[in-house]
Length: 198
Image (cartoon, rainbow, N blue to C red; front, side):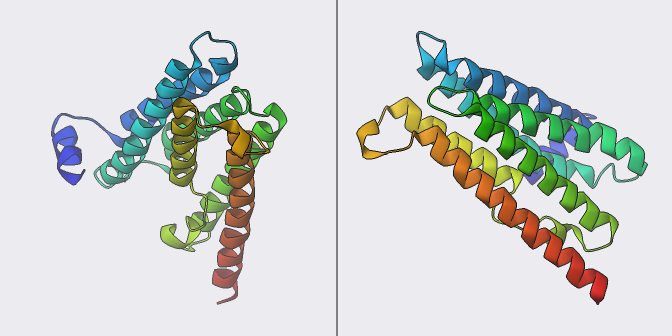
């Protein structure tokens, strides 16, 4: 991944460009999931959404590596060209997942809000000087969410017997994601408080 980042840097690709690509992938994933309940062949849409999520994970890793080559950006600009695209893609992906076949739209909305708030707490921790690693800790980061959504998509594609589950698989994933985000918020907030008290 570092080698790819070096190649992209030599080609003039910036972390902002990768962040925008990640936003587009997040939006495409959300719409792919959203229409799984209306499509005659939902497996293709589950596959499309899963691939978008997996490629977005790679974009997140590249964004982090490329950022070090363009870290002199003003804070305000950083919010609009990096943080804002991430929050948009997070929201659309999770809300779209909530509208997917056998999912729950209200649960998707609640999970999206929890994910956005966990990102807000992370940004708050960085601003207060808690350190990026400490501020980004928790059991349900954006990469973890994308992995969970991808695994769920793979399970939906394989059409495993649904009789084994009393709750539809996408809803189980959203519940795990929601409680994981709430735990992440709590952990990050405690880390901020420990840093403020030290």
